[in-house]
Length: 116
Length: 114
View 1: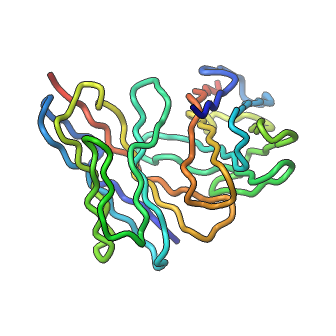
View 2 (view 1 turned 120 degrees about the vertical axis):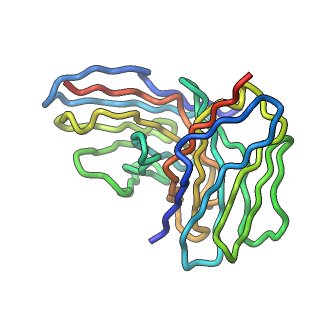
């Protein structure tokens, strides 16, 4: 069975600083996708970034980038130049490639506070 | 933009009541999902559907059922609500049969069962 672990329940960072959220996962499969989702307080969950396991290049989206280490089964999210609007719960998620309909497996979440 | 809406943001029900949570998406997505979100546990999949009238159990289906009579609408039913079903419920949808498709989430329904 696949599992996703986020070992940091809470983190804080000063505005404009850089922060890294960690995520590890466990699977015996080779083809899968990884995601980071953001859930701001009382607002909708939205996708931050996604990574295909077959791609060696780390995904980036503006100030958000990942460090994907396939052998280590690690998928960390780096937020550069943190902004107050980055305050949110962040979830790491994993999905296999072959399942019809999809079954996204989430980590426990990391609550990030960006302080002015 | 994809829009996923849920019928209620907050709901208070009594133990034993039958509860309906409705979810509607406006992007003609094939797949729809119901998750439950609890602190320290992340999101857990209750049920999902990859086509009209089709449903598959997720990781925690006990005490729940679902209905998908139309492509855009996916309902979660608590047949007899219990206090341990107090939680945040999130609906999501995704396009196509590929599991790699990004899931789009609704705003959530916070359910309190007394």
